Image 1 (tube, rainbow, N blue to C red):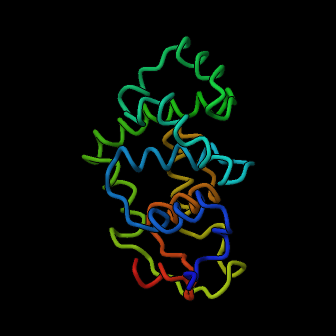
Image 2: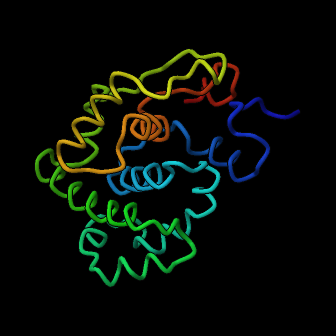
Length: 187
């Protein structure tokens, strides 16, 4: 018998594995949170499937999402990234990743960790929604609006409210699995 999944996960094996193992699972590790911030920003204007297929390329190019190493990228590193077919070769997105890494380091100094800062938007506890259909799930919320505004004020880019909400879903700050999905109750 086939498991019932969120409708967005489709039939593609990579998407289903991501859905089944990662999406919506609470993440508290700064490096992993940075990875999702990078990937969600990279997705802007593209499909999640496109980014997921390039995830290993992003890991390789961005030093396994080592925040300190990425923050020290030189112009040469950025030019090399622009040549790498394993990622989306968009100069603004690549420069944003480097800049955002520097800003994550500043947040770590201010709050002790990126985790403490980011989870504060949901008061440290995942929001459990009760959606039956994909079309009921919002693209943004007042919390993602607030997160986006604060990140932008700090100098982050590619952190619009829609990207922030997708990030919140990915790292388990909200449980937006459809209620019929086998993962809804597990998470």
